Amino acid sequence: MSLLDSKGMLSGALKDLFARWNAVQGVWNDAQSKEFEKKYLFLIEQDVRGAIGALDHMGQVLQMIQNDCE
Image (cartoon, rainbow, N blue to C red; front, top):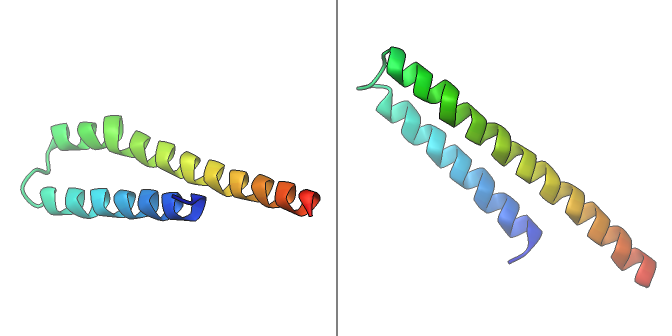
């Protein structure tokens, strides 16, 4: 699996998570749901965005290495 594929899968999973969360909020929208969102979902989002940034950086480094080897 390439870095680009991994990045796409992470992005897609994050979109899917929040689409499902939006659907759940139609039936669960109280103080506990807000706490769950704050305690878990926003942290997951930050971590996934950090991972996507790391994948971008790794792709740049790998490209530089490949260019240096040519």
